[in-house]
Image (cartoon, rainbow, N blue to C red; front, side):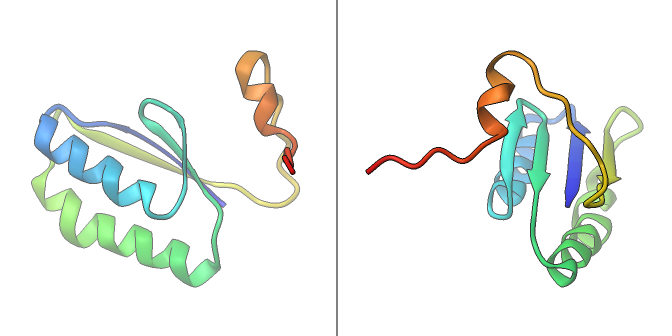
Length: 90
């Protein structure tokens, strides 16, 4: 799993980046995405960021990628607690 946090100044690039991440994962907060996928897909995401997006960054832009393992624990409070369990509605 990847946890990706970003701060991109230019609106157009920020929108393009968030739309790209939305194809693979879930938005946790405005500029934070959680991406659960195969190892191959996760590597492809990082490669795309390096080859396409990084070239367009200014000194003010930043992306942080956290590689999470199965043994990592996540503590949630408030609305985020709803994401801890799957809810099935029939």
